[in-house]
Image (cartoon, rainbow, N blue to C red):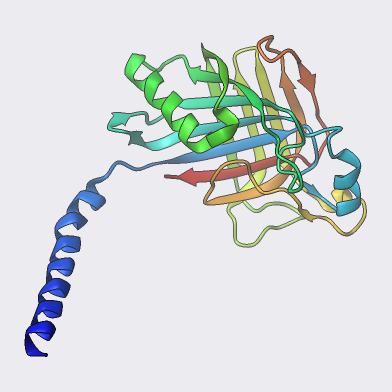
Amino acid sequence: MKPHRISLTVLAVAAVLSVLASAPLCLAAPSISGDYLEARTSDIYTGPCFANSEVNLAGKEAVVAWHVRQGAWHGVPVEGLSVVAVVRAAATLGEPTATPLPARAVLLVDERADAAQKDALVGFAHEMGGDLLADVVAVESAPIRLTLEDGPSGAHHHGASTLSGAASLQAGDIVELKTRALNHADHLCGNEEVYYPPLTATIEAVPAVTLAHAFRGSELGKIWSSPGKRSAFVGRFAR
């Protein structure tokens, strides 16, 4: 029995040493974080009755945007740059009883990015978007400005978040988003909740109302304008 016990001990020590040896590499791995903005053509903060009335009639389109405050992607610094994904799916995005796939997408990359940064931002968007960005029909450069306002989230406070719910995005003349915080007047049935979660990973996100939500590109076979809906998320991401 003693040789068996010694063998197990040696293996355990070896395993611990292996983890410790790899720890510096993990700590040195590139990280990326920043601001997040999302808007859809259906309410995301709503009650089941409203959500059911929109299923497969609305919510097939979305705009998702990331602004990198700090970090790199696969070793390429992308601090201060932004990337926007515009998605048109086959069904309501986030609907738990049906898949929205297939989906087609357009990527808009910050015009200030050099070739390596552009590739990095495209790769980052693919990683974050997953299957929704499996079929990107166009990648274009554009001037992109994404801003989030800090502060309490107004009359409808969401936990301890420092996000106000107010944000804006302008990507050339193709995408325009502007949001405000939810307030008590946005409670139409009294049974509202975050019915659909964000489409991509976030570390925090608060629902918001769109004051403007427009896509004016030609690549997806449809343009839209969908303001005045409880259809946005304002948040932050880290990867």
